[in-house]
Image (tube, rainbow, N blue to C red):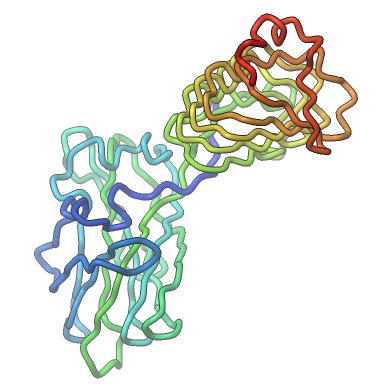
Length: 325
């Protein structure tokens, strides 16, 4: 089995909402920091204030403060041994050219530091902030640091120092710190990919890729997305021809699914107990009709023209038609 890095995961309390921001802590080498009530794209952000120019790193935060699970467990963030994480954060500064970024530290199950990314630009995750002063901007970086063997959890470390040559103190804000992690697991047989699992931590809108490692994604396995209770919508690529039994069952936040015309086989109870699901959009080019499909506990099935095509010949629909409005 293998995994694909496909989804952005906000680090716990990475939006610095008060009072949850208390789970971050100031490193001994840091300057003054606080949690203002407004900023970034959310209701709070971490602010380093009035640090002298040059020298050592002037502001350092560590997450979480106590270093314990489950805050930054690899699995919860969709990361795995050997990954070189893509980290993303929002930041603003009062001094052009400020060096700022977010690095990672790797810990074993006993909470002992194994290794950490370099603080240096290029080797770590630090970027010279050359955008307009006083405005929020999103930064993204992949460092050269790979998560080492025996890593159980990681800490995220936002840090900054003033750019060289600056002649005044600097204030900088961090917000929306997160990482792109793996959420899909798959198998490959005869050159074709079957999605077998999706991490239950997956959230929001998910677009399933049509190829993985250069091979077509042709199937969604039994229960592959079951109990993904925070997924809001799923788009299935037109490379997929089959969807397994209970593929999306108990995904209680799922509101919409798009099925392409390539799908010729779908299992039973695919949407069992998807209590928020109000419609499925089926591509207009699908010539397979709806009789083979097994839709359970679904209010409306819509064709591409928006008409109600509830598959009334479907035996399972007739058996459970009292569930439909």
